Length: 519
Ligand code: XMP
Image (tube, rainbow, N blue to C red; front, side, top):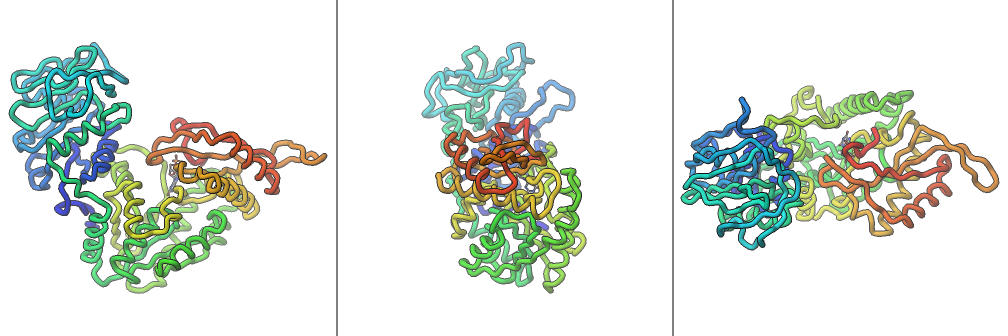
C-alpha cells in the first residue's frame, strides 16, 4: 500500500544517496536528530528524479568499494549541475573530486581510526571546530590532488586531503566520517552543512509528523476499518494511539495472548488502554500456542511454529470483525532499510516474526505509518500523543516472547518459573532507577541443572541467566555494567524466592559476537 513517502512535500527534504557504507543509517539518524527530514535512496537515483523529489540537499554516503573497481557504483554526473548543496562523505568525496578533475589514488597510506585534522582554509563546513580536532577515518583510497575547482579546507595530520570545498558550487567533501561518535565535532560539522550551507529550518518535529500522519491516514483510509496487531510493545502501542487519534474506533487493536507473555502483561496492556479510552480486543490463544510447542526445543522450529499459529489466530480473530480493509503494522524505517528495499544493499538479519502471510491471504492492504521513523522518533511521537510513560519507556520484547528465553522445553511450569524470576529482575531495575538507563533487560531460563546447598539440604535445580544490554537499535549491543550490589540483590532474591532456580549467572557478551536474545 502506498503509504510511504509520508514526509515528502510536507517537509524540507535531504536525500542520502547510499553507496553501501555500514554507516549510511547513522548519517540518517544524525540528520534527523537535527530535526531535518531525510531519506536514504539508491545511488543510481538520477538528477531528474532528485529534482522531482524537491530535495534541498544531498549527502553522498561512504561505501566499501574503491572508485577504481570495475562495476563500482557511480553517480549521475548531472547531479553536480543541480546547484543544490552536496556533501560527499569518504567514497562520496572521492566521486565528487574525480568528477571535477581531481585525482584519487589507491591507498598506500591507509587511514583507519582516530586522526587529527587541521584547516588550511576557512570554510562554513568547519565553523566552530577547533584545529587538530579528532575525526574518524576509514579509507584505503584518498584524494591526492584537486584542481583549481576546489579549495582544500581540511588536512589530516598525515598530510592527506581530509576536506574540500568547490569554489563556485555548494559542493563539499570530507574523507572522514562525521556521522560516527568518534568524530568529536561530527554533530557540529553536520549541523554546519544543514543550516549554514543548505539553509534547512528544523521543520521535522514530532508534532508536525503527527499532524501530517493523521491527515494522511484519514485520506488513505476514509471511513473504512483497520485492524491492528497490538503486542503491547512500544511501536504497536504508539501506532494504536495514532490510529485512534486519526480514525477513532474504526481502528480495531487486537491483542493476542500467546501464553508466552511476561508476568501481568495482559492486565497491564488492558489498564494502559482503558485509561486512554481506546477499546482493545484481547483474545486468549495460549492453549493453542503451548500445545503446538510441546516437545519442541530447536530455536528456529519454535519461531516458525509461533509465526504460523499467530497468523492462524489473527486470521480467525480478523474474520470475526466485519468490513476490514486495512492492516496497520508498526514497521520501522530500519526494517525497511535492512530489507534492502531502499538501497539494494540487503543485510541479513534474524528472521523476525510478523503478521507475514496475512495481508495476501485476506486481501488486506497494509499501512505502515512508521516506516519512515526510527525507534527514538516513535517514542517522541508517543509523547506528543500522550501515550503513558510506562508504555513509551518499555524495553523491546520479541514477537516469540518468552519462548526464546525459555531454552529447551516449553511448558507452563517452566514459563512460570521464568516469569517470576523476570519480574524480580525488572522490578529491581525500576526500584534502583536502572530500568530507564538500559535498552533491554531480561532473564533466560537454561535447560541445565546444577548442584547447590540450601539450609542443610542439597539442591539440584535450574540455572537462570540475566541479560542486560545497551543498544541504539538492537543491531549492536554491549552488556551493561550494572553495579555488583544490584546484581547480588537480584541473585539472592531470585534464588531465595523462586522455586526451581538455585543459581544465577550474568551474561557478559556483546553483540556481535552474541545476539541479544539467546535463541
Ligand atoms: P537479536 O536477538 O537478534 O535481537 O540480537 C535484536 C532485537 O530484536 C528483538 N527480537 C525480536 N523482535 N520479533 C521481534 O519483534 C522477533 O522475532 C525478535 N527476535 C529478536 C530482540 O528482543 C532485540 O531487541
